[in-house]
Amino acid sequence: MPVRKCLYILPIYRTNPSGTDRGNTPSAGTQTKPRLLDQVRDTIRFKHDSIRTEQAYPDWIRRFILFHAKRHPAEMGAPKVEAFLTHLAIGGCYAR
Image 1: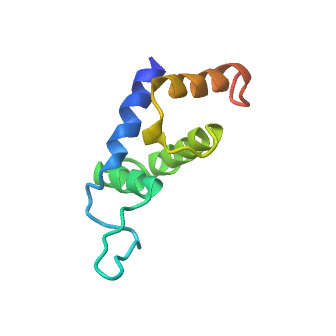
Image 2: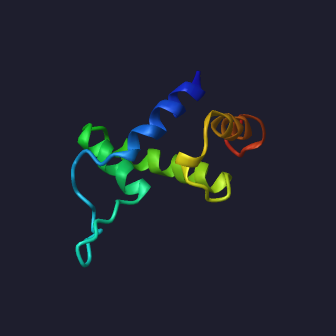
Image 3: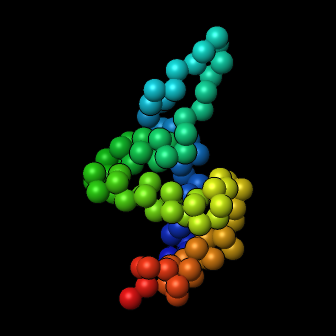
């Protein structure tokens, strides 16, 4: 069940619903796309989620990215999410 939730969460952050670019100012007429974690924060704020959610989601996404050698989540699919969750459940420092 957790795999489905993770697969649902990651793709929604490819858009920037609030329309803000969080400091990424375009230079010489070129539009820069906001960074992934900025998009996550913007989406959470747009949905009016709690501040703890805004702190936790980027942290877990950062851990997911670092676990897979800094690959972008858009390049990975369900097997990578399963590998990360298995790592957390079996050998990660979060297993209890």
